Each structure stands twice: as C-alpha cells, then as structure tokens.
Image (cartoon, rainbow, N blue to C red):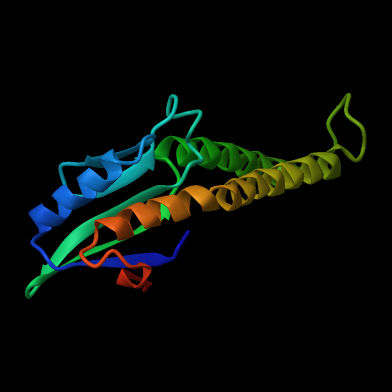
Length: 165
C-alpha cells in the first residue's frame, strides 16, 4: 500500500501517456483517467464504485527528466471505500472515547456495561482493520495485472523496466 513504483519511458510525457492509454485499452475491464492536476489513474472498471471499491487503483504522475519520462505512483483503494471505512472506524473510536469518559453507573444497565461496550468497540475496530487488510491481500492479482499493463507500455517491454522505489 505504501510501496512506490517507477516506470521509465524513453519518450515525452504525452507520447508515454498515449502508449499507456493504448495498453490499457487493449486490456478489457481496465480503464485510465487523468484528472485536472495531471494525476493518472489506472483501475479495474466493473460495476459501480461501491462494489469495486476494494479493487486497487494505481495513481501516479509523469515526470520528465532529460530525454526520459518517468511514471511514478502507487496503489490505493478507491476513495469511496477509504471514506466508508474511515467513517466506520472513526465512529467507533468516537463511541469508544465517549464510553471511556462516561463515569458512574447508569440506571437500567448492568454494572459492567462499560467494559462490555469497550470490548465491543475494540473488536469492531480490529474487525474493520482486518477487513481492509484481507481486501488488500485479495487485490494482489489485480495489482500485478495493472503493473504488467504499465510495463507493456514502456519502450523495452521487459519486466526489468519497472522497479520499486
């Protein structure tokens, strides 16, 4: 998730983007988009965003140095999936803080209601984080496919044309 990748092209950024677009178009089920800030996103396009939110998205930028163009970026989840799980975890953390700052016994509740609630909130946070971890691990084939698409768009078409940075 935090690993950065670098792909080298021996052409200008415009030609490299055109080659990358052609390589993505050649693979059914994948798409490419460029936002207003110049960030290029390569993603799997199947269904609505909420259903494919855990498919990894490669987001990167082209940087031109001398006669070479470098496409640098990394993988992440769809922003909607990030927002949903941040909301789940944030709500649970706020509830946990609320329970921990509440003092005294409350009428109609068992004496150990606070410890039960703390245990529930901690279990929910761990479950949500494990869900994200397993979704990230399940996305490995798609990450590898996207990396091979980008590598096929580079000039020499060899796996050695990309490296981890």
